[in-house]
Image 1 (cartoon, rainbow, N blue to C red):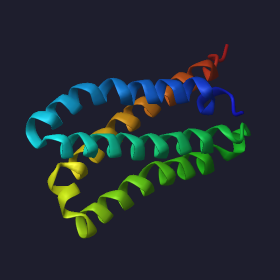
Image 2 (cartoon, rainbow, N blue to C red):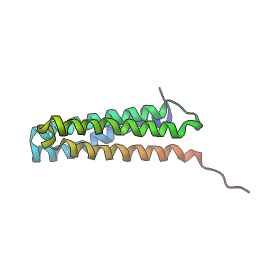
Image 3 (cartoon, rainbow, N blue to C red):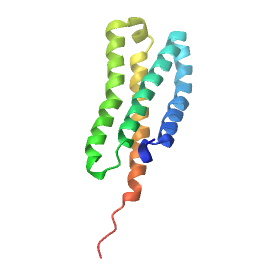
Length: 134
């Protein structure tokens, strides 16, 4: 199991953040689109959560300092590719899902995942402060 930014604690924070933000968004979805909106929110949360979990896993697999850029780029690709593919699929092949707001919900939850993982990245960099020269 990866430690640090890619560990279990970061996955728990990610999923709690997604579930916590999905409750008010789900209420909005019921009001605006009915049950189809709720299923759109659930699908968007699952897709963005799986993509975020994959990004956390990609970051946590290697702790070598020389691979920071590679891990970051792989995490960015994992975080973006699954939601983007889901949005393209919904737009071209599932009009009822797209009309229920699925694409907007995916974009919203993508930004939630991005904000949570950015905060986790800054928190993981905090112990790496460089001491001033004397």
